Every structure is written in C-alpha cells, then in structure tokens.
Length: 108
Image 1 (cartoon, one colour):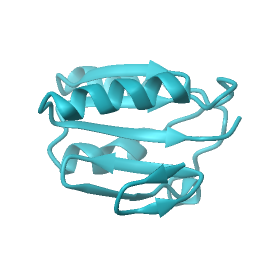
Image 2 (cartoon, rainbow, N blue to C red):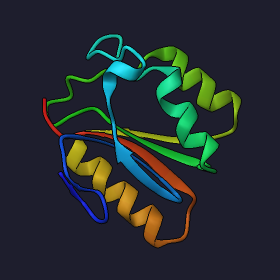
Image 3 (cartoon, helix red, strand yellow):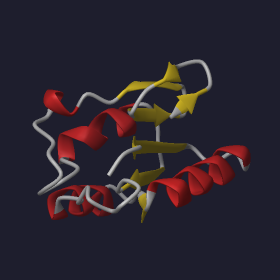
C-alpha cells in the first residue's frame, strides 16, 4: 500500500490526525482470531467515531468478536471489508469529514 505522508508498506493504522505502519506484534495479532481490541484502542484515542477494518485481499484476517463488542459498547460505527473495498469506504468517509480510522492489511 502507498499511503500519503506515510509511504509504502504492507499494513497501516490510519486515524483522523494521521497514521503509522501497523505492527501486528505489538498486540499479538494473528490472522486468527484476528484484529485485537488493543489494535483499535489507539484509533479511538485519536478521536475516531467510525472504524474501517480491512480483512486482507483474500479475507484471511479475522476480527476478534471482543473487538467488535468493544467498538459497539463505545458507540463506534464499524465497517469490515476486503481491503480494496475497505480503502474505498475509508476514503469516502474521510472525504466527507467523518472522524474515520482504519486498520489495513494489504496482503492475504
């Protein structure tokens, strides 16, 4: 992926005030059980009211049910999609002024 102001990489965390590469080892993320609650806490700390979670190009990355529960409890709108679709959702929301954040996995 090539992210404006961040460069080229394989996985990214993007939030309303910027972003950074997403290092799965920080939270122990694996394809299964998938995106961890700790992965999204940083997004919320940056003011996100909507979160886009990409599952990879072949939908191999899962989303831990605890993560979805956390976001629901905090009243955050969530979109879970294949990476190409997730990028489009994110870009549309960001362009419309929504406080959107996203976790993007560009491979499998």
